[in-house]
Image 1 (cartoon, rainbow, N blue to C red):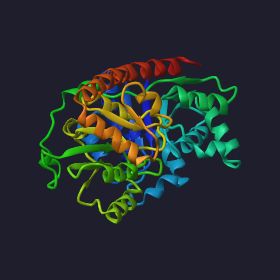
Image 2 (cartoon, one colour):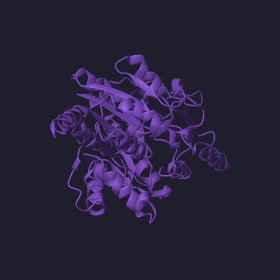
Image 3 (cartoon, rainbow, N blue to C red):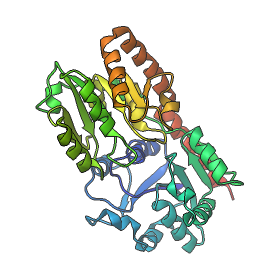
Length: 368
């Protein structure tokens, strides 16, 4: 059984980080698995996977233009490789569409699985896209939803589509818990050990809400600093807003980093301010870190974090600041929140996810 993971790129994002973390583990379990990217532009995740030398990494476009992932020419390029695999496990749009079309041209030689990572999909509410979207989904043998909420959305949207199942994304809990903290000065020159670091790890995309965390600084003492990790289309806008608000001396942008576990261990509070999520790996990593985790009370976060970490109203910077200060001023609350977060994170250990996916591959492969 040969499995090909297909995704647009290994840029910043939860689905992308998941592939970096899991492909080596699938290989250790004896699954012959490779990765195909529609585009690659020297991303750290891609380099890290290649350095492991555990699988073949196929890249369809080496250009500097990310928009090449939307080129229909990718259908023919993909066809060349798809025929050599028994199963293709696809992530994200437009890989979702192009893989189906390439497979049809091969007379459906490869069995397709698609993972839905988000509660937000504008195409299913679009009058033009909806019929095409429904048809595309029927070409997949299995639709994997990473949360119960996502499954409910697609149960309602894809009526009669009875091949949906839930497999929660996972995190290498042991690696997070065993990571060593760093001196704060090592992270950035403006940071010192006396400062309180509030860390958010997330891509700078429309669905994220880093600015609410930045605005919370106006309600917090001067020794509270925000550290933002990630890249994306909205990064420049966020940097400009930070300067406009006068917080450029209290907000640090670190870009994409490969030492996330150590950064989590160094921070005082972990926050994920976001408008929606699927099953956020950042939230699970944050809860596993041994630090209190605070998140927006929105779909994809309230279910995972509620009852363990601390939730705040979307966009409410004042409430976020109050929750942060309460945690840092109340040692008992801090420790109780840490314990609850670690217990919750343990439910999402990556090995559970790996085994469930392997069982799914075996069932799909064996089916006629």
